[in-house]
Image 1 (tube, rainbow, N blue to C red):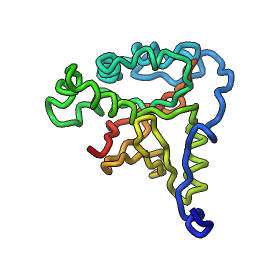
Image 2 (tube, rainbow, N blue to C red):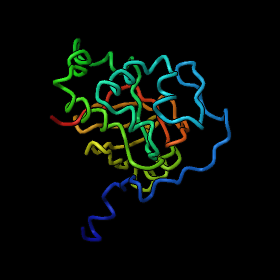
Image 3 (cartoon, rainbow, N blue to C red):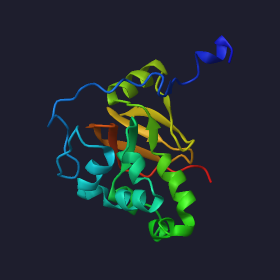
Image 4 (cartoon, rainbow, N blue to C red):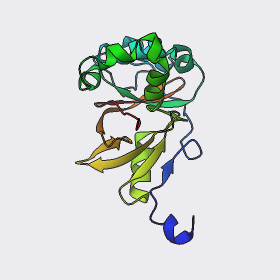
Length: 188
């Protein structure tokens, strides 16, 4: 990319600039769905404790990704709530969790996962550097566009749907979770 185009391109948030996972103090995490989240537990364990993430947890199990999200990572997960899944057309989730749709479900779920630890502060700074936009590369090959609106971080998926980060910086032993209100979908 030439220098002329480089200054107009939104910066990328990727593992290369993601902040390293600092040692987090216990009980410094926000609660998710009224459940306490522990920075010494992995993403899979904390998500399983949150009553507003049960659809996500069921989808992760159906896709066979529990071991991955319990593994060392580090990962940043943009975790859609049950209400986010409820916004999808009727029957979508039931159809996605069928064994024959495992590949599609895995693709959708990995569009919510980035490599490394990406904090809200990192996202906001990168948005500012990008003059209002930043791109987050996901493991599923979806580029999410991060932006700010009314003081909140918003994410736009490849289809153009927009999610708001409802709970940021939920620290995990293997990464970070940001709870969002919309399912991010790849272009299909």
